[in-house]
Length: 446
Image (cartoon, rainbow, N blue to C red; front, side, top):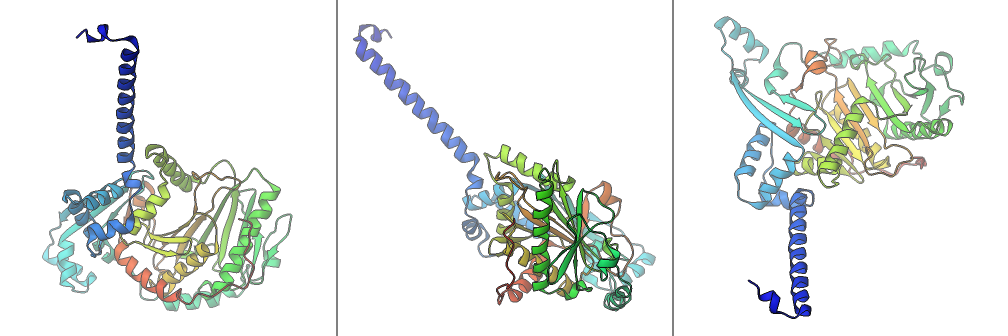
């Protein structure tokens, strides 16, 4: 016990030094191991996880997602455990089962709604409810496939309605005669070959413009016309920011057709330049990313979203842009397009996403919102370039698609993300395989 008393002082100090170094090494090793363990989910390889846990099988429904996650949780395979951890770093999934009991009188009516499909009848009697919650953005959704068959959800007369609407609305259209019937800002109208930007007569910001294409029918806007309009919008943001440099939050909104709350049928996109912060729902996404960054060792929330959706087969990539079939949609058929900054890849993929709605899903009433990274900021904590797009329901069905559930509760959506992805992917692969070079110079004023 007292052996140190009999050692020379130099040897005594050397022993203490060795013990100190050894202790420090062990402590640092523990810290490094702990940190590595914490961020393990953030350094995984998505391709390895796909091959290591999915075994070449695809998840084909939201119900299948719940089953797969239970399998991954119980599986001893390291890749499966990492898959489970990756998903639950952002999301939580719950599934519930419920039954209804149908009287003979109501059964006859229900069968009529379901076209006497016995499979749908069984699903109606034994319903599954899948809840998905985003732990950071606090977005939540409940999926119940049976709800898509309730009365008043679908319509069969949309094509005739649209044809008549385009013809009747063109006569006397304010936006077709924008020089006579629209306002302008101090710098006047901004024009390109295919579009013009006017001032909104009823503003929500100091600078609130409207991008109008010269084409009256939005379904006939070509890729070249769309990109020309977007290029003009980028120049408008550059111009207005030069006039009011304290405003550096850029937002665009596009509602298509009266069903989607458009005040006029002629295609028009709202452009706003704001200050203070991102607008409300975009700000929620910003704070979700900020909180994720702080709680997960500086990890990129949006990259994590992409990785999770990629892992589940819910992404389509085009150059520097990625399309996600969003796991917590707030309305039917929600799609998210994302890139680090505004670029041709992003907007071209966005154009073809609109074409998916029109040509594949036959969803013509559309609401969409674009958010840009904050100007004059190099911070990775700012929002990336994003587009969120949803269907607003059958264009000729004036029943509102917004209910108390949407306003005060959780979103309930009938379109299954995994089934939607198959349609989206097939169309985009075919449509974008022979994509051409744009002639118009692309704005560098991002």
